[in-house]
Amino acid sequence: MSAAPIIDVRGVRRSFRVRQGLFAAPRHVAAIDGVSFSVGAGEVLGIVGESGCGKSTLARVILGLLPPSAGEVLVDGQRVADMDRRARARLIQPVFQDPFSSLNPRRRVRDVVSMPLDAQGDVPAAEARRRVDEMLARVGLDPSMGERYPAELSGGQRQRVAIARALVLRPRIVVCDEPTSALDVSVQAQILNLLAELRDALGLTYLFISHNLAVVEHVATEVAVMYLGRIVERRETSALFGAPAHPYTKALLASVLTPEPGLGIPDTGLGDAMPDPSNVPPGCSFHPRCPVATARCRVDIPATARVAGGQSDCHLL
Image (tube, rainbow, N blue to C red; front, side, top):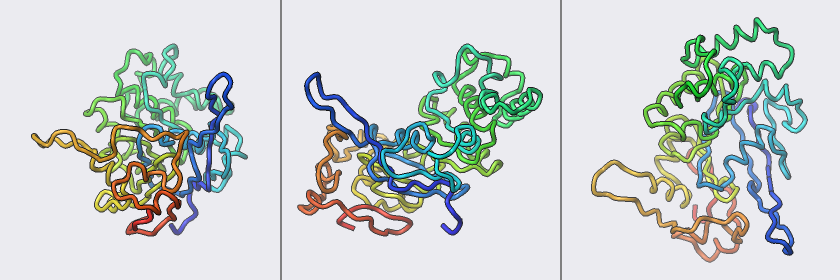
């Protein structure tokens, strides 16, 4: 990456204090454990992994909604922790998972989209109305729909409203946290195509979080695979999907359902038990579920190894 990254995450950790019972001492659970990466302007970094791996927590730290327990996040060369919330909002905005709960049902669509402008406190009413109409049209909605309430819209239309709200301040970065998972498959494709068009037209950078590997393969330029709070593999999209390096990445790709009849449900070899972030095993955190783990994997944390199109953390590379 020749130019300075627009998102730079440096050794970020985020832990939560969890009570174990009335008399037991509380424990600290690491949702993010030493994550570092950078994203160049105009790129799309897809972040994938099982539920509970830390994807959404990482998104909230980057957005400045949660402070990191250690490390730092820089956005456009500025530390997120030092930025005024209004300045941060002009630079980076979120699109959340559920358009049915992320929009205030008591406010008209026009007011919902205008909220970031209102929060800035320095945008005249006429200018705000013009920008709201412009953004509604850009996301494929007639400006007259601004007079409706969210309950009068379909799921796809609501997500378009959420995208318009995120873009009305003209940010450079959009954090998309499962933006299509609550939508029908046909509507998902429309929203993904819209996001791609907006990226090209507005020069946006996306951090795209999803558990849907097919969606990530379609939209991302690079993919980071998370497991128990760590990134275990990060590579260019074509390289990762063409020849995954880490055993966990291979298992994730093997879990994708296929429409071919007779193949049934794929067996990933990971077992039925989910990883426990409150009880991370020593060594490589993936070794209890890894089909090729060695004695070394049970003791030593793997170093990052260079692989084609990126990097991966595994002793066997």
